[in-house]
Image 1 (cartoon, helix red, strand yellow):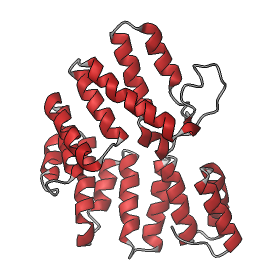
Image 2 (cartoon, helix red, strand yellow):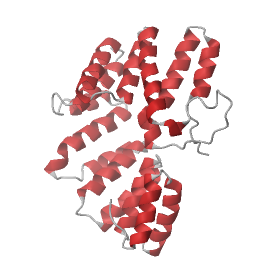
Image 3 (cartoon, one colour):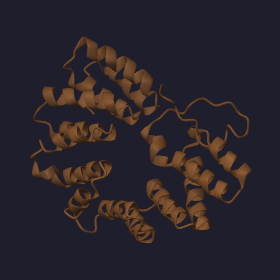
Amino acid sequence: MAHINDGEHTKAIYTMIKEGLFKDAIAVLNKQFQANTNSRAALSLLGYCYYFTQDFVNAANCYEHLTVVCPEVDDYKLYYAQSLYQACFYQEAMKVTCQIENPDYQVKIVKLQAAIKYGEEDLAAAKNLVDQSPSGDPDTEVNLGCLLFKEGRYEEACKKFMTAMQVEGYVPDLSYNIALCYYRLKQYALALKHIAEIIERGIREHPELSVGMNTEGIEVRSVGNTITLHETALIEAFNLKAAIEYQLKNFDAAKEALTDMPLEERKN
C-alpha cells in the first residue's frame, strides 16, 4: 500500500482497515482524494478498500485513475483488469490485460484472461488459455476442474479440485467445489461432509461472522459483503446445505441452514 504523508492520519486509516472498518476508511480517504484528485496514496488505499468490500465498480474507477497517474506501474493495470472482471465487465477487462506487455506478468495475465473467457461462457477460448498455463500449477488444476464441471463431467472435475487441494492445503472455495460436484452426483453424504468442514472452520476462524446467531434468536447486524466473507465460502456452503436437506425432505434442517448463514449486506 502507498503511504499518505500525515503520519497520524495514515496510522488512523491503517487502523480502520486492520479493524475492518472499511466504510469509515473509505469516507476519510474520499475526503483526502477530493483535496488531491491525483493522490496516489489515497487512490491506492481507496481501490483496496473498495475491492475488499466487493464494490468492484468503484475499485475499477480508482485503479483506472491510477493507470493514468502512474502509467509505468503495471500492478495498477492488473488490479484495474481484475476489478473490471469481478464487476463482470469482461470485454473491458480483456482490453486492459492486452495492454500489459511486461513478461513478468504473463502467467497472471493468461490466468485472468482464462477467467474472463470462462465468465463469458466462451469455454473453448478459456480451455485454450488454461492449456497455456504452467502444468502442475494448482490454479491450472482448478481451472480445468471448472471447465469439466461446466461440461457435466463431475467426477473428473472433483478429481481436479482434490488434486489442487493436495497441493494448496485446505481452501474453502475448493472444498465447496468438491461438495458441489458430489451434490451433482447425488452423493449427498459426501457433499455434506465437505460442507460441515467449511462451516466448522468458518465458525472457528471467523467468530465475527456470527454464524448461527439468527437461528438462536440473537439479533445480529450485517457482517458486510467483504472478501473475507467470500473467501470463507460460508454463504455458498449454507445454500448448498439447504438444497441438499430439501432434497432429502429434511425441511426443518433446510430452513435452519438458511437462517444459520452470516447476514450479508444487501445492496439496493
